[in-house]
Amino acid sequence: MKTKLCLSIALSTMIFISCKAQKSQSAKIVLTNNLDLELPQKTVSIKRSTLKVKGIEKSFPILLQNSDTIPAQVNDLDGDGKWDELFFVADFSAKEKKTVELKWSETDPKYSVKTSARFGKREAENLPVQPATEEVLLANQVYKKLGFQKYQTDGPTWENDKVGFRHYLDGRNCKDVFGKRTPGITPENVGISSKGAVEDNYHQMHDWGRDIFPVGTSAGLGGYGLIVGEEINRLGILINDTINNVEKTTFKIVSEGPVNSVLSYKYQNWQASGNKYQVQETASIWPGMYGYKNTVSLNGLKGNETLAIAFSNINNQNPLQVVDSGDYVCFILHDKLTYERQWILGTAIIIPKEAYKGYIEAPKTGKLTNSYLIKVSTKNNQPISYYPVAGWELSADPNFKDAAYFSNYVTTLAKQLSAKIKVEVSK
Image 1 (cartoon, rainbow, N blue to C red):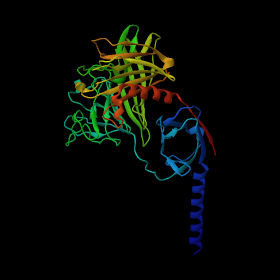
Image 2: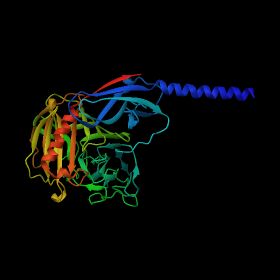
Image 3: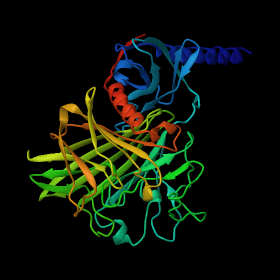
Image 4: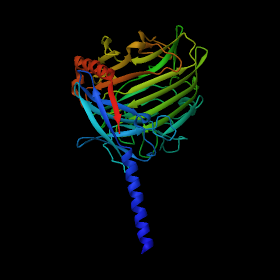
């Protein structure tokens, strides 16, 4: 009887200590929008060091504003096994101050999933595609050299509740657009046959939508190259090339969560104009926005290089708009930019004003064509973030059919992206 009593006391003590430890990690967070501007679905990222938490690697964040829960997640951005940031999105009215309470749960709250990253691959043509989260691609392992397409949808896809994108990991490094008609995440078997083979089944309309954007020999919506002196260099190759100009490409899905998905690309020894460059690229997507954030950092620069962000103009017959808005310069096209000019699509790239150095039109022939090339200044290990945007007339917002409406959406988004939320944390 005494033994049972001791065990009971010990167990109660452990539960008490556990609850106390969890409670000690809770925090009050005050979030302030100082601007006279509404900020829907505004991202908030709080570094772990700011929260001063320890020993909760397997816990899940619970953010409470009064009786409402704000979906949140933690991201391990450097891959060391410990999360680095608390990430969430919230709606702010003009000049609004929110007070939220951060708690931690040992069980997953299962928030509604509004972002996704997907990647599938096969090691031989007769093997089925398997889901994966990372890949290493050497220069001689590109599509034409292998003789078959190794990747589901030619490479990874990422999406939110509004729009989807894909990256041609097979050496081309283009950025493509999936038009979405519904807010749900697209099926896992997009790009795969019933037998698990790679299949182009996404250039036809489905309930969720389809691939709507022609890429050709452009780098799509937000791919990039490097102008060295006067020479334009593409990151990667075209479909019929058998050897990549990147010695080693390393891809990884860094995070996939209900409110944020993050993908990483590392390009080692990119040969351009006789030089070798190292590139780190990160794509991040969250709910509510018809676009995503792309961040590029280079090393090996000699001083005569300019980063060139590619903005495909295939099927465009309308003038390019270049508009200053907030801290950004907005490049906007609106036309029947889809396959065979079937539907109206607005596309845009939002570039930081402080780095913008003008634009040129890509040559008609060569490795990087059919595009405007937005020139951006860059220094070694200095990240540049920009935002590709796509608004399809068949998406949840049918007003994208109107050019003025899409232009206003983009310029307003740029102002919202310029806004900073003030974050104050206390225990």
